[in-house]
Image (cartoon, rainbow, N blue to C red; front, side):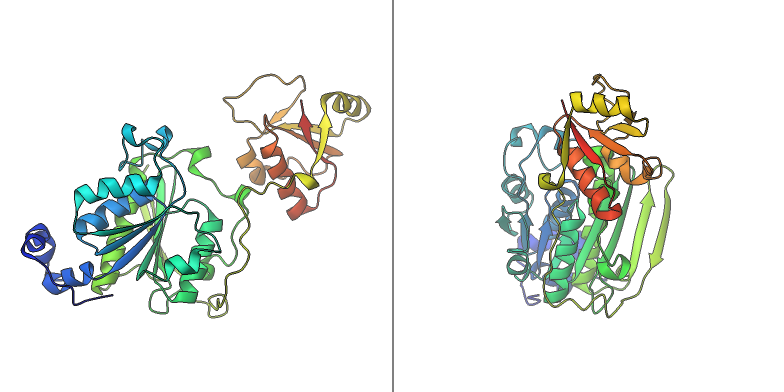
Amino acid sequence: MRCNSSLNNEEKIRYSRQIRLVEIGEEGQKKIKGTSVLVVGAGALGCSVLQYLTAAGVGTLGIVDNDWVDETNLNRQVLYSLKDIGKPKPLAAKEKLKLINPEVTFKVHFIRLDKEFALKVISQYDIVVDCTDNFTSRYLINDACVILNKPLVYGAIHKFSGQVMVLNYKGGPTLRCLYPEPPHPLEVPICEEFGVIGSVPGMIGSMQATEVLKIIIGLDGVLSGKIFVIDTLNFNTCVSSFERNPDLSNVTELGEYEDSSLCDNKSVKEISARTLKEMLSKSQGIVVVDLRDNEDNADIGFKTISIPHYEVSQKIKSLSGKDAIVFYCRSGSRSTNVINYLQKLYEWPNLYSLVI
């Protein structure tokens, strides 16, 4: 952090309400200006984080995302408008943020932050903010921050709830101290499947931005070794503590990070409708599982049980002990993911993907 950054008269006026805080003052504002922050993910959380850090006067903001603005983003990614649909998110974000504060330097990384780029990009910044939506990225970012000794501000959302914590701060706990290994993608919800109320990422993102500013200024009370959780349906909140595990935090190189798509068609046996009818006529121990969402309920000509693919991990007991299980979805990709999941974790035989 370049703590000797000077403030011009316009900046002193712009940030006057922050400077009046005895915890910040001019020296604190200079620290804010002299700091570089990388925000990974320019979606719902990222939009809120970026706006507040821009307004606060963080000197350099890096924006990482490889996605384009879509109409479905607009209910919660409030940095974008209808005119931004089809634009790369980092570029659209930069355009809007420049209007908020032209004094900030913005660096756009229109890439997927994978093992190849993680260390190279993260090494350029003082603090990292995780605004991603999958555990593959979260563990990659965590491990890269541990290797490079960068503090990491973590945020996550689900439906009406969210959580915030600070990782790898001054030798504090890392993500692996709390969750040593990433969960399987089919065992964790994502907002595309379960939904999220648009105001929750705004709330969690603003909290992430606050933690960044506390880290920069050096204030007490940083959420290091603590996870804050809020359920906005009834406004229950809790703060749980966890400690650093030296063994789990000893990361010296990036490992392998499983792609969340999980698609491996080579290991999946496909079955036609005709063959399935023959099998059903000979055995009562075959079950056909419809993995489609409830909105997609077109008849496929077989008696099925409906289990949306993201609920399979919760309903393992209802599927065990069958002679064979046949999965159906419209494209076959969800069937492939589920079959790979069950084969890898439970080594179940006789799993099929129905092709109609």
